[in-house]
Amino acid sequence: MYSYEWDPKTRGYVLTTRASKYIANEIRPVFAEELLLLGMDRKFTFNHEETRPLLWAQKNNYFYKGEKVAQTVGVRYGKPIEIEYVFDKRMKLQATDVDAMIEKNARIMSLVVADAKRRVKEMYDATVNRSDVAYIAFSGGKDSVVALDICHQTLPLSVPVIYSDTDMELPASVDYVWPEVQKRYPDREFVKVKADASALDNWEVFGPPSRTIRWCCSVHKTTPAIMYLKKRLGIDRVKATAFLGVRSEESLSRSSYDDMSVGVKNASQTNCMPILEWGAHELWLYIFAHNLVLNPVYRSGLTRVGCVMCPESSEKYVWFIKKLYPYELEQFSKVIIKTSNKEFGSRKEKIEFVGSLNWQARQSGVVFNDPLSMPVEYAEERCSRFKSIYYDRKMLIEWIKTIGVIRSIRELGKDDCFGYVSLY
Image (cartoon, rainbow, N blue to C red; front, side, top):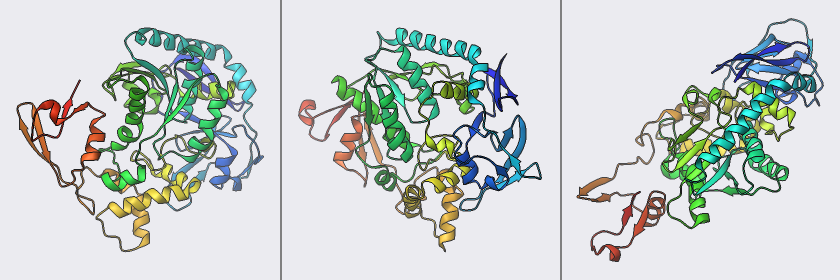
């Protein structure tokens, strides 16, 4: 990862050879759509049809020609975002000279890209003989778009792209980005996988996920991909190599990742992250230089692409989702209210409960209208028995397929046990 300095001439930035391991405040381009959505056209004059960046942002701060011009100071769900400006008169904005910015950074970016391609080849060569399958994971965000483009130039065309549609995705990811990337790489195989049950149904059954109980990722993201690969290869156990668009700059936890790791989120999967050390400033240069497919939600001000309602969301994220996708947000909000045992005296209290993200903090099932109880477990030698009022044979057998092989009673020669799970 390289660092950067603001460049008043291009109204963008230039990379510097001063290396940086982790930059806390990643930068992002600010487009006309965001300025209009936030009502910032009251203070700025600009071409509303401009497609290039007009400002750049770092967290809550907005910059023009390297100088801070505004900042957001408060976000309340359902209320306008509060903005403070550091100038008095109306300011006219000129768009970033993207072509000039790309040219100024071409030499360093060529080194960055060459290094990423080299790592992709090294990772593939190191895993090809000890994995059953390799695939490129896709999410619809800027990181996965860049990772896909680099992997496409390096990996064999036999390596497919797999998109786990969580059924909680932003509509723009499913309806626009996914079809567009397939048009860009017509020679590569693209596969979309999805859990059998809808996300809304599972939210009602298991309760909304929380920051400490994030069942949503395994049920709706990881498991569908693994189940698809098992079916594709016709085997019960699959060792996979996944190429992911993950960057250490995104969070403190990811800053400690190695770019190649085994069993981090799935015991049978090796995760390869060739752009792990890239900063957002390098990422945006690559996107602009190669004219990659850009999720339109970035143009409206979202800093990340995820699910409509996520337990890791910030209040600002939910504010933007409310503006962009009010109907989709409302569906998940209704489930949050429906499953909670909290008594609400008014619609305002319901809105504040969802908007303040209090629902994210639950650590058990006791806060539900229909509390979940732990099953009673009996262990005898190598056999375990569970007793629960929620027992559903069909659902349990389907879930167990993700961790082992079910064998019938007749195979085991037992009268009192419906099945057996062979773990690997």
